[in-house]
Amino acid sequence: MIKSKKHKPNTLSKPRRSGPIVISSPLAPAEPRPAKKLPPWDRTVDLVYHMPPPADTQTHYQHDKRLGCFLAAHGRAPAASPWTRLPPAIRQRICLLLVDSHLAALPASPPVTLSRRVFTRATWSRHDLVVLDAVTRPLQPYLATSLALYADVMLALLSRYTFHVVLSPFVGPRLSPLATLWLNKYGPYMDSLIVEIDMTCLGLGPEPAAASLGPGLARIQALLHDLVASQLRRPTSLPLAHLALLCRRFHGSRPPRPSSSSSSADAEAVPRSSYASSRSHRSHHSQQSLKTALSSNTRASSTHSLEAPCTPSFHHHHPRAGPEYCPDAHLAICDALSPLASRIASIRLCGFSESYSRRLVRALFPAANPDACRRFTPATAWPLLPGQTCCVDSPPPSSRS
Image 1 (cartoon, rainbow, N blue to C red):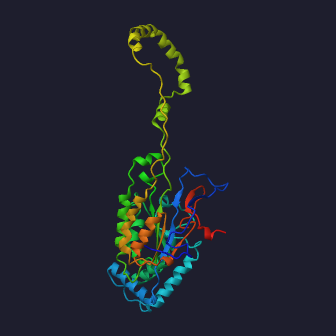
Image 2 (cartoon, rainbow, N blue to C red):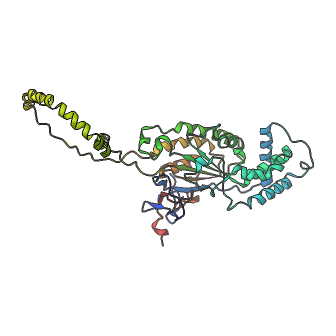
Image 3 (tube, rainbow, N blue to C red):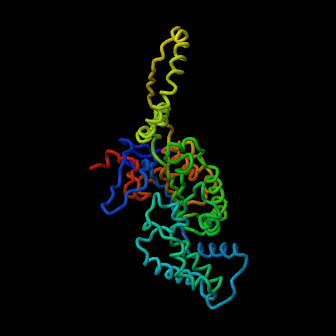
């Protein structure tokens, strides 16, 4: 079990806290209201663990090894050219300066998303992410020159940017080739990656009827297995510098569904306009059948007198809270990341439960130092869009002013 010192509350230990609180982001007067009000996001846990860096880090050696793996994946060696005659360290420095010159033109260096806008709009604004084409288009003249220059520029790009991807039941190679094929091809050469797992679809969605659907986790688990398989091609000496694993899910339980009696009453209710238009027709029809009804009631009076009177009965339904939007048991699909224990240098977990976050950190870092774990209160892994609410962890009493 991971323990921490008492004088460091923001570690992986269990400090004294007041419990989660709900915060909201108000809408500006000019902003349109969301199409539907979503439940609060679950962001009660946001922690980071950094593995201690090695004492001797040889940047040039790492670049040479990464370049060798990149060229081996393409199956051929680059042709000799004046560019290849330069020392690898010089080529790396030139490409990093080239990528940095374009990176400086972007506002606040946002992550490069590999997912379509339909998968990111629930938690990210358009300004929070940048598409892949925006960072590769200025570099196309260099990428199309030769294999040697292509490899050096791509490695510089993959090491300088943070990449982002959303995994959901609706992500596949045809609909999202960048989030699947491109990620698994170039992911082993990235330094920073954000994997956002969408657990708000199908049976985990906000609608009351979603409770009758399946969670659709098999597809997400298959995507995680593909991601792990691609990352296992990464040498242990070149670990992923930073992995952010974000679980997008709602906090709390579903509201109770409407009772059957109220829905039946609504279904049997007759609109006022329909009643007014057909009133005269029903009056004429009732006069024609009056004699038949009276004779029938006379014959049945003896039978009804022996039965209990037909009195209306009222059943009081006390609505109970529905099931959780996303039970903690569903988080176990991320156990698929356990084989990456020796290929990740740091990890950030947000949206998971406290117990599962601890368990996953121990699985990925068996010799984890609890003093190196930091906790963000409140969570900052996502932006909070206008009109949305989220449940975050309240700061410990010692950190409040």
